[in-house]
Image 1 (tube, rainbow, N blue to C red):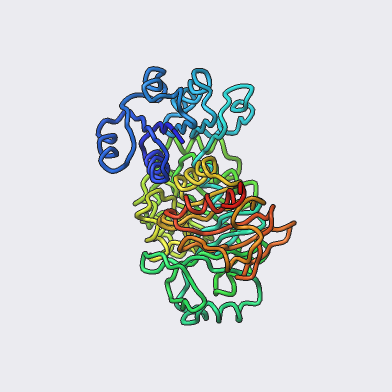
Image 2 (cartoon, helix red, strand yellow):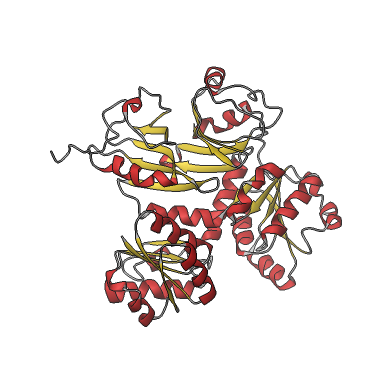
Length: 454
């Protein structure tokens, strides 16, 4: 596939990297010459210096041959214009734009076929808020991912030293836990472990587990997690993410405070929000946090534009008595540190954006694809086709790429946690975890049997 990626920031870089590694022909456009030079040295992509909203630059990028354009600059206007040019000049089949203005991204009709004709609009901040709300709903989990229209969750958390499962292997887990769940992946000492029945769970292991949604809370309790719901939330930072989160918390009747350094931004938030208290100040000030009774807060959520400040603020809040702390973090390098240092969960707008874009480029009826951990693995949901290698045989007889685990199946509204004897039938919603390097092999298995055309 030939694709043009506009914007060489973290999201653009990651998308270009993933697509190029999977054999796609990628052209990356950006106005920053230094950044493009660095990318040329690290990625197998073509780079073009210039504005993604320029018809001349897009013509140079061979937009007439492109099958997809992904516009992910920091400018909504540039992203929209790039997609407009793609529609007007060359009829590019897939157009994706990052739209960060909160009011604009809600105007779904505007982006439809009758107007801007953009296939997918992504607001990273809104995606981050969805993650935060999920983490509050399923307290005790550090990550919560939805599959099968919300019927199945992939949840992740660190195993505490006091957990009764420490020192027991996964065969013992299966006999001790009365419900159905499948531990699909373990991150241990920053390394990905593909579990087997003999794998022993250790303190501080970070586990990814498939669980039917209605059983998530019971599963977390089994691992000794506190599942009490939020009643009071303290937000550090007055960004769009803070505003969108506060609006959602107000709808749920949760008492919310925002602390923001800038007076003008505090006034803006106060005018927009109905019940949220907006305070001007420094969210890393111990005196201010104590004065605002941080020790009684259920969640401290740090969403400033400074990731180091978010981590510092979250750690300080927990030290002062906040029950749980969530951080907005985009950098992959920081993600694995979070459970190790005591922060309870991460909102990663970049990862959510990448996951949504990947959905549009996968084959074989793939519904969604979400990067995991340090992004060396993905959780993939797909619909099993009659023509695919994966149907009609017990799972134990299918040769999957190394590191691939079938985690859950939704069949006719019934959730199945599979075993080696499970047979996938056409129409099943199947969720698996696999190494990113194995995605091309997985796509082949999901599409057409070798003997289909015989």
